[in-house]
Image (cartoon, rainbow, N blue to C red; front, top):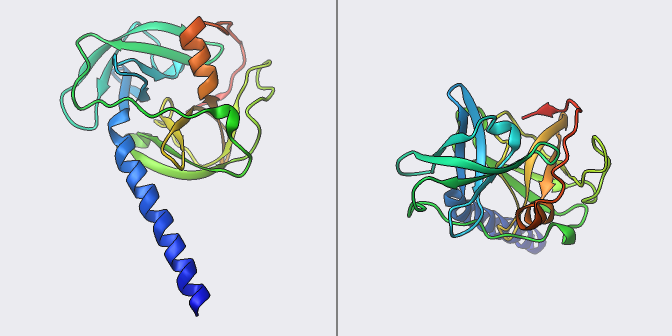
Length: 212
């Protein structure tokens, strides 16, 4: 009986911690509307209001950003990589108070089996959260030699460009491809940081994955 109570206490503590980190992340994950008919999600990456999303979410040079609260904001695409499926946007006006940069984690330190959460805007549901686990190393062969983060998790259209975070609430990747039922791939945070710093890996591929 004591062991059962101890187990419940641990589960309750974990549940509280997850709920807390979800609440903190909500101001760092936005809706990105790259076309009038659709869009996906995005992550506020720094204090300047840089927003990172997937390239396929914003086919044109502009997008509309919808924070969890407040008015819509207009943003311009300043860099993109079809190969990495990344797009970088900057706000047309100074960052709104309702936007908060996401705490960033180091995807190279992730281990197989670690718990992660995905936060995005699937099927029109704002800031929906899904729990999963890292199912493979951060390097893989997908449409070439692209580094990817395999995750056992269920995602839906609209999760593209959202946050994949560890249990400390640090963003370790951005989901972009559904491989099969219960399995998705994400762009690792270290690849995103490298792209932001150097523009590396701007090659383009011709593969046809199932985009979120």
